[in-house]
Image 1 (cartoon, helix red, strand yellow):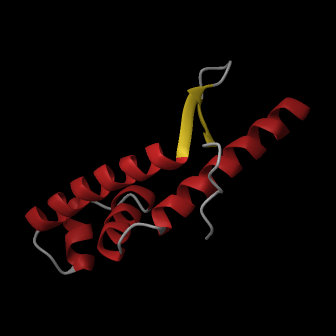
Image 2 (cartoon, one colour):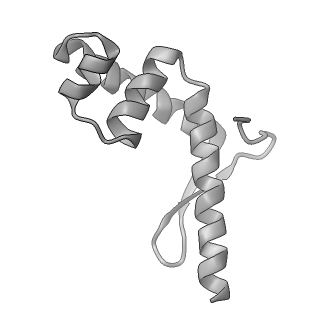
Length: 99
């Protein structure tokens, strides 16, 4: 249906914007976010790939999430759609992050 196609386009645009913001993070934080959240690896698996202890990986993931949250708040205006889904628009005067 037209509504589901529109919804899919909005979600794709939002995901592309978020990926662009992730790409602006420092490499260590970007790797931690990608491994733990986007690839859904455990902290132990993430630590092994990053070559750190589990404790260091936990700290890096926590700091990466905080940095990502900060960057998203600078770049995006978040809101709930009529259906209750989380949505975001690039803030006025900003251009979407380039990938």
